[in-house]
Image 1: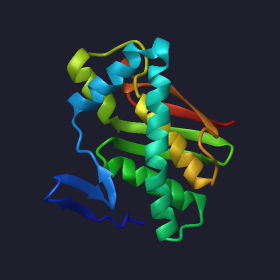
Image 2 (image 1 turned 90 degrees about the vertical axis):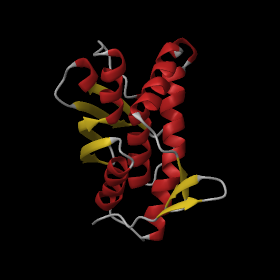
Image 3 (image 1 turned 90 degrees about the horizontal axis):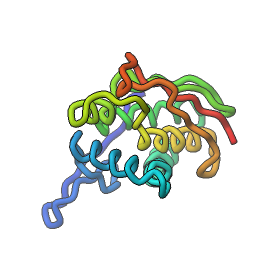
Length: 171
């Protein structure tokens, strides 16, 4: 199933919309700096704040699409998340699992590639935004409230791994 997408632009406010949701056009500089800021302030919860903010802002987009298209199967709902991730230019996902958890692999990652271009490889994962995105995707697929899943990045392109991997467990 291909996503049914409508992109619009408000010429008065210069705002972009995707299926009625305000969307910010990003680049690797923006995502890299946002990620680095979260990491620099991790002692104050920066990485967790970024992940939870991503979860809270992506979830309504997914829920809206799922509701409007009357999707019932968790597999179809997960595929909506997979495709949106790609449409947003964030990378390519492979998803497996079910209500109790699973795994996600990124064969490409905008955040990792941006980080590498700006600061080279590093010894720890930096894809905090995607942690929240994945949580929103699993919560939407299984009709769970926010923070129902714990997502960990277990392999990372920014560390030199061929792909990024995430493990998901239900809380």
